Length: 161
Image (cartoon, rainbow, N blue to C red; front, side):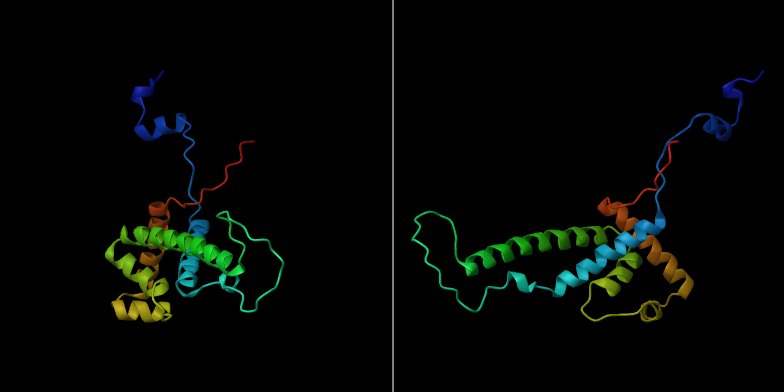
C-alpha cells in the first residue's frame, strides 16, 4: 500500500483535479488583432454622424430657459466629445498595454499598428534584422502578452458533462 506522500509530485497532481482554465491562443491572438486594428482606425477616424448638419431646419420651438440643448449642432458637439473621450480612453489603454511588453515585442506592434504608414511583416523583420521564423514567434508572443496586460485573454470553453 502506498501513501500519497510516497508518490512523485506529478502523480499527486493527477489525483488533484485542478480546474484551471486554459487559454485559447488562437482566439486570444485574433482578439488582440481586432483591438489593434480598431486602434489604428481610431487614429484616423472621426465619424460623419458626429459632424454638425450643414443645412438648417426650421421648427417652431418655444424658448427654453433650462440647460437642455435642442440644436443639432450642440447635440453633434456633445456626441463628438463623448466619442472622443471614449476613443482617448481606449487608445491610452492600448498604449499602456504596449508599454508593458519587451522592446522587440513593442517595436513590432508599434510598426504594425501605431504608425500612419502601413508596413508589412517582411519589411519589419528585415528592418529589425530578425529571421522570419523568430519574428513570427516574437509577434505571436507579443499578442499573447498584450492580452494578459489588458486582461483580454480568451479561455477555452470546458464541457462539464
